[in-house]
Length: 560
Image 1: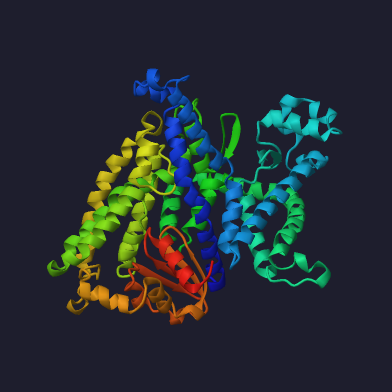
Image 2: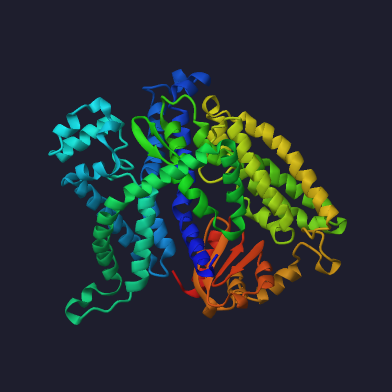
C-alpha cells in the first residue's frame, strides 16, 4: 500500500475513535435502562412490584434508556464532529463547528430536494412499479404529487424508502446514509479547514478571513455535495447492499474472515476503518426494529436491546461483536500466563506486574493492544496464530447463536451489561464455555511455540537485557532526563520533527517529517509496549493511559 494512503487511513481510523469512545457510557445507560424497563427481565428477576411500570424506578430507568438511545440515534452528527476534529491539523474547535454547520446544510439540502419534487423522479432510477403490486395504480395517479407519491411508497416498504431509504435526522427527512454522511462531512470539512484556515481576504471583507472563513466555505460546499449525493448515493447504497449480501452468503466462513481480517489489521492501526462500516452502516445489515429502519450491526443490536418487544437479540448482527469475548476475556490472559511461565526464573519478578496488568486490562475492558504488542514485534508467528484463533472465535459465536453486543470491546464489563443482564435475550453462556477452551488452547500453544522456537518474549532476553522493576536510582535518573512528555518528544526526533499529535484508545498516533529520526529504544524506555513506523507516521503503544500522555505531549509542544 502506498505510504501516503496508509498514513491517511491511519488518521481516518484514529478520527473514528472520538465518537466511538462515547459509546461505552451511552451503551451503559442504554443497557441498564433497557434491562430494568423490560417486562421479561423484571419478571425473570422478580422485580415487577418494585420496578414495574408506574413506579419511580421504572421512570428513572426509562430516562437512562432515553439518554443512551439518543447518542446512537445521532451517531452521524457525532462522526461528522469527530472526524473533522481528528483530521484537522490545528484549530480543531473551528473544524468542529464547521463540520456541524456542514452536516446541517448537507442534511437540509437533501431534505429540500425530496420536498421540491425530485423525489418522484429519483424513485424511478432504482425501482419499478412492478416491485410494489400492492399499490396497484396508486403511484401512477400520484406521479404529479411528489410528497404524496413518496408517502405512498413509504407506506409500501416501511421507513426504508426509495434507493437506499429515507430517514429522519435532526427532524429533517433525508436519505438514510447512516454514519457515512457524518464521515463524508467530517473528511471534507477537515480538508477545507486545513486549506483555508489561514486565508487572507481583501480588506473590505477581511473580517471573514482566517478561521471564520472555514464554516462559510464548508456550508457553501455542502450544498453542492448534498445535491451530488442525492443522485449518487442510491447507487452507492445498492453497491453496499450487494457487498453485504456477498458477505452474508459466505455464512460462517464469512464471519471467520471478518474476525481474521479485523485482528490482522491491529498492528497497522487500520482495524477501526475496517469494522466501523459493519457496526454503523448497512454493510452490517438493515433491519426494522420498533417501527424504525436501522442500519449497522451495532445499531441494530442496541435498537433491539432498547425495544421491549424484541425477545431475542439477533445473532446475525451480534456476530460482528460477540466473537471478541472468548479471546479477550480468556485467550489473551492465558497467553500472558504462558509468557510468564516461559520466562527465565530470575526475570519473572520483573515482568509479572507488566503481564498481569496487560492481562487484567484485556479481561475487564477488552483493550488488548498492550498484551498483543508484547509479543507482536518479538514473535510475529504468535500474532499470526492469534489472528486465526480470533477469526475462529467469531465463527464459533455465530454457530452457537450468541447475541451479546458491545459498546467498545469484548471485556467482562460489556459481557455483564450486554450478556448476563440480558440473559434471556442474549444467550451468553457459550462465551464462557468457548472461553474456557480458548484459555487452554492459548496457554499451551503459546508455551509450546515459545519454547520450541526459543522466541524472545518478555523475560527471555539476554542476561544483559534483564527485565527489572524500577528502583529509586532509576527514577532519579529518569527524572534527570526531563518529564515523560519531554522524553517522548526527544524519542520522536524532537519537536521540529513532529507534525501532528493524536491518539486512539491505546496508541499515540503521530505524523512526523522523518520517521528515521524516531528512537524506538528511547520511546520504550518511557513505557511504550511497541512502536510502529511507516513513512511520515508513527504509532506508539502505551495502553489505556494514552489520552493522558497525548495531553502531556501536546501541552509540552504548546499545541491544542
